Image (cartoon, rainbow over all chains, first blue to last red; front, side):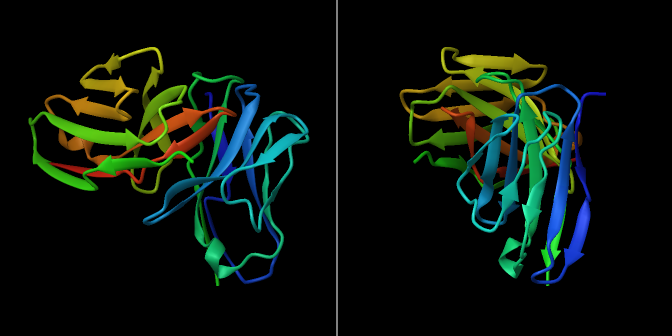
Length: 113
Length: 111
């Protein structure tokens, strides 16, 4: 089944403890992206990647890192999480180019205390 | 910077009613406009994608229209059912494969 898989689905952590949220797609898509969703603010793009070893900042990149060493994986790294990073996170992928549509993962609900 | 607005924020209708969800965007230089459905605790499911050169797309009981010049898109749902209850999001795609989302319309269809 074609899908984007995020892990974990739920995570509670403490301020300052480094964490990684994984994202993997099995569709050989070139493009991958991370979003966060917050009440009243909607979905906002954190980082995106057009291909392996190519990443770029979205609208809210502060406090996050990403890497794209393989086409299928695009992990989101929070090196020193803070409570304002408590949010619902989504990973998405798309074939390279506009107008091909996006496949989203099921989301990761992160709580930083 | 692209801004996307959805009206209304919430909508409650009786089963069987036809309804329209609205989406507006500030920058008409879009490649396409996409509609998604989000169920509680779930990810986003793509419903319809209208390319900038198109005026509308249809899938079953769903019809989405796009008017780039006025910066508007509408999602029409015919003969609504309780299973249609969800949050509906629109997103405008611009250069660099950038998606800008609206905040969504939370739809409740009552049996």
